[in-house]
Length: 403
Image (cartoon, rainbow, N blue to C red; front, side):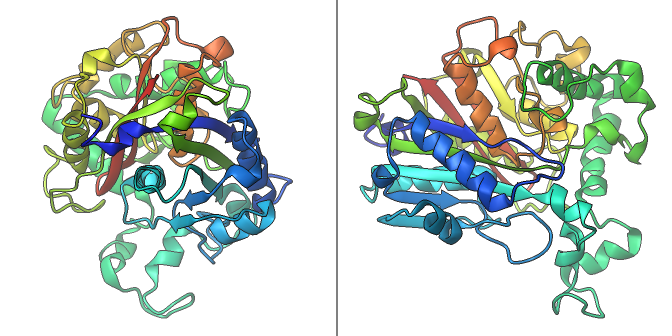
């Protein structure tokens, strides 16, 4: 199977993550350099060994903080000389698109060791009152344009200028169609908070109760404050290497067992073709078709939680439960706890750990597979992890295995 599915010949060999800030006293470039140097050192490499670099979505020259650092400035700061480089735009298989591209480059022989990073500076952008993500995208003729164009002309008049009301529609559908209850959805946030208490680099570590969750303000019915992730400044980085070289490196290789990036439905964030078959179903089906492993083989799951409802859809799409049964699957929080049958978002996810914007989930998967979780380490000896990023239109998922 490895001859056909070439991601199996690629391994993660090092990880790094900067301290978070809300906002940070360090520049986003400093945070990027910190995380990248950590990843390179963790792999036991020197900067001169890095011959490829990738990021998502590439530097965005705006004030949103969504992507303040790109590959050019990072290469200059680290004095890298590479054979291959790529910035993966937002119309890709989510934040994992940069990982998939790096794996393809290694499999194709373009590079031996690729540095992949994701930097975000939303906390600083919002702190300084600068133009936000939605506002920047809303104008068809640039900042300050008098008219709103494109898809935004159908949303801005109704105050749907952020992702919260878009994905509240997904949550409301799940509630109305399947009988999902707020107390069930709450378990995603409550589980994340419990796990974050064992993560020294998590934003929210104070215990949270169901009453705290139910008492938080409604943002877009039925999504409450604690259903929404936490903007931060920070960077997460990885080194991906050829598997044959990885076997002789510092850490036990974490091999890419299978990836999923399919998009077979007409789908957008705001106007899905079907709530019954979201894009996550396409990506998950592709991933399982590239492996002999099954959902029952997964030891730990790191599933996207930009909003808590995303996690429910991923649980169903990945086959951990049937469509419409995720509410019952997580009820009480026992199954998804660190000692449960499917430990979920063990570092606190984005809801309590911070909006590392997707790649934080892969960092936590590696942390668990290498047994570095400390207080939050799962009770079993994990060998297989699933990571899923993105929501609705542009999504990706992958299985990673400790070799």
